[in-house]
Length: 483
Image 1 (cartoon, rainbow, N blue to C red):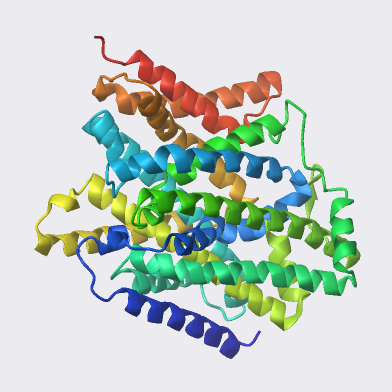
Image 2 (cartoon, helix red, strand yellow):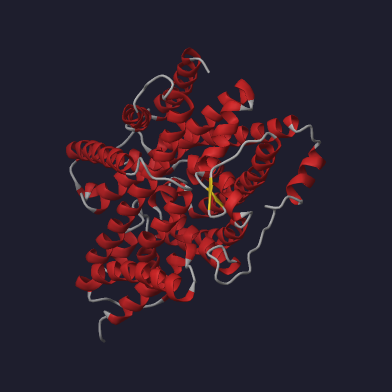
């Protein structure tokens, strides 16, 4: 792809986002950046959340990971469906009844200020790393695919992407993001469909033959019943449920969009509709995963292996798209990466800004003249942190989606434990010990997993979030107040 065409695509794409931003930024108020004036159409929010829920990580990691983990991720998808039901019928009504902007304010109402700050802090740490790792993969793809050939250093690419996101979101924040993410979700789904059709045509298959090739492929195994495996059905299903509750229902970046809908009834529709959209999209990714390995086998494309496992599976889809699928495939892939990057990172940055501004800067009770200054300062700080984390992890290898879920297990587990305790019990804590209980639960989970692997050949896998949440609840019971 020529540099002129590359930059023309980026400029056109960004121009569209800026037009949407300018329209959405009319008549903004002090709280518009954070709550979108609570006037977003629920169906638009649901469709736009596809981009936030997928990201460039899913775009390349889910298909690539099929080579090492078959279709076992489908077990995780089944668990997510139950998780979305919990979010729609349990969490969403509570958030609306309490009229929350930062969802962690619930912890303040239920327990107190220390628990509130602890929960928000765990979110800030987890979201910072999760968003930065998603951004990292996106930048690596852009570097490998386009910018290395132009001798543009990766640190400059990171800065440019963060600046572009800041330009179209800094005025009206989540109000703009609701609209831009809907457009970017459309682009993302279109890219996947183009890739599937391109592979089908290249292999000279009809749709029925393509479906048969997927179903009968050696990687087309849906369920893993090996109890010791990290991808065991029950581990994946329960993890899908809990990670969805934690990474969507207890995640400011995902729920902040839902809370821009005007009422709880429509917000429930949004969550349930989004659950269908995201499950369908992720299933498409799994089908695409088998197709890219079929294509690689037919064309003699090989990935490096070690101990019977593929290395750097995140590289396969970009490699095929850029070198084998022609110019249309390359352009579609570029747009898909940009769309998934902007759609997932912009809402994360807005959520981090919101959580810190509300939970630690008390922006809601500040005078009008200082609110904008606080928001801008926090927004700048969030971008700096993102940049530093990406630089720190630049040389990491392997499927980044696994790294993200592992980190989430240790950082969202305490949040999940706090909320489950609050929702399903009436106990109160000796609050000064809450941070210790949450940190201890995460640390014990890490040490237990190491011991189980070494002594019992049993890997928690994504189930570390369950163990972490359970330990958090136990430690919270230990520090409860006596009546």
